[in-house]
Image (cartoon, rainbow, N blue to C red; front, top):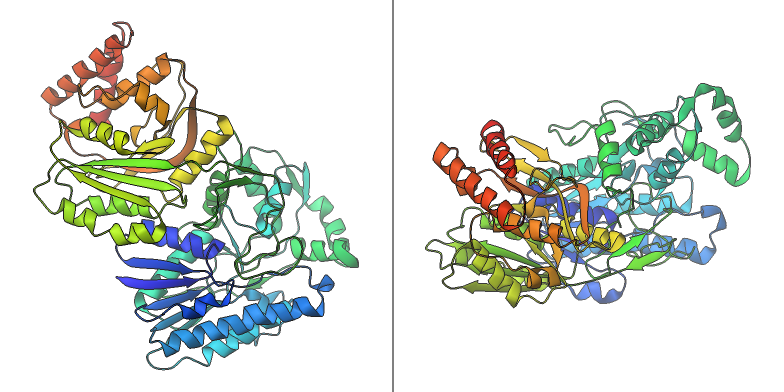
Length: 591
C-alpha cells in the first residue's frame, strides 16, 4: 500500500484525487492531507510516506489589479512554499514528489510544442514556473520528481472558467461558433493519471490532458444539450467574437480567454498507459450530472474535511491547472475557498449501519466507501452476528483511520436474529439525525452522503432514495434508475441508496419478518404520506449475489409470496401478485 501525503487540504484536485483513489483502488493507497495555511505544517513528519502530492497554491486572478504586496504573496506561496515542501520531503526520505504546475507557464501561446521553453507572461505564471524549475532540480536517484503541467481542469464542483462558461451555455439563446482549439482535462482523467504515476513512483514532466482539444462552441453546445437547453451555436457571430479579442480592457481579456486557442500539440498527452476514463462529451455529461439534482437544483461542491457542508453558487476564479482560489478579491493562503454566492448550511450527523456475518471478503470495500466519504460528520456502526471468519479483524483494522478522519466508529459483535435485527440494533446505538444503511457486500460512491444531505436540505424530504449501480456476477453492470411512481412498486426503489430521518426509523422499525423488511419500511413510509425524494444520481453499488438473487424457481416463488404478503399487510390489493411475478421474472432475465 502506498502512503501518500497531500499538502494542501481542501483543494479541489487534492480532494478529488483522494476520493477517486479510495473508490477505484481500495486498499492500494493510504492518503492523508495536511493544511498549509500556517507554519505548523513544518512540524509534521514526512517520514514514512512514499509520495507527497503538492497542490497548495494561489490561483490566477486579475493580475492587472494586483499590488506589489499581492505579487509577493504569489511568490511566497506558489514558489517558496512549494520549494520548501519539496526540500522537506527529500530530506525526510520521501521517494516521490508530485507537483501540480500548469500550462500557464507557457504564457499566451496558442499552440505549445514539446520542445518549447516556458515563457510566463505575468507574475502568476512566473511564480508557478520558478517552482516548476526549482523542484525539478532536487530530483536525484531515490527522489523522483513528477511535474504535471495540465490545461484547464474541470469536473463536478470545479471552479474557475468552466462553471462560468456552463452558466452561459444554460442561459444564452445564441453563441459564436469560433474555430478555436482548447486543451482541457477532466478531473477523473487527471486522477487516473495520478494513480498510475504514484503507484509506479514515476518522475518527469507530464502533460495530462483529454484525448482531443475542443472549441469553445463545441463545449457550449454539449453543456446545453446535457442541461436540456436549446442554444444556437452559429458562425454568424464569429466576426463579433474575433473583433472583441482586439478590444482593450476586460472585454478584450474575456473574449481572448473564451475564444482564443490554447492547446498542446498532438501526442504530448500520450503515455504508455490509458488514463482516459471518459471522453470529452461523456466528461461533460458527468460534470453536469454531478452538479444537478433530479429537480435541477445545485449540489454543493465538496469542501475540506473540516468544513461545513454547503449548498453554494460560485462564479469561479479563473483557475488554470491549479486549485487554490482567492477570497473577497485578494490573494490569501494556500487553502482558501472562494464563496461568491448565498450559502445554505445544514450539517446533521449521519449515522450509517452495516450488518455483517462472515463478510471478510467484501467488508473492506464497504468500510473504505464510508471512510472516503466527502461529508465530514459521520458515525459508522458495524453490527456483527458473531462471525466465524476474519470479519472482526478486518473491521478492527480501520479504527485508527476513522479516528484520523474524526468519524465515530463502533463495532458490536453478539448474537442476533438476522440482518434486520442487527440493523435495528445499530439504529438504537446511533445518534444521527439521518440514518443510512449499506450492506457488507455493497459500497457507496464517494459523494453519496454529501449529496444525500444536500438533497434532503433542498427538498425538505423525510425519506429519499437514488439511482443504483448493479454489479452482475460476471463483473458487468447496469444502472437501475430511481423513480417516483404512482403505483407502489420496488421497480423504481433502491434500498442501498435510501436515507431517512431518524424519527421514521423510530416510528417504523424493521419487523424482522422476512428478507424484504426494507421494502416493508418503504411501503409504510409511502402509506403514511411522508415526504419522499428521488435523486437521479448513482449513490451506491449493489452486487447480485446471495439469497435475494437465488435463481431457483423454489427461491423465486418464496420471495414472490413474501413480497405479496408485505403488499397485503400494508393494505394493497390482490392484483399486486402480478407485480411480484414480474419482479422475479426480471431477476431471472437481468441476473
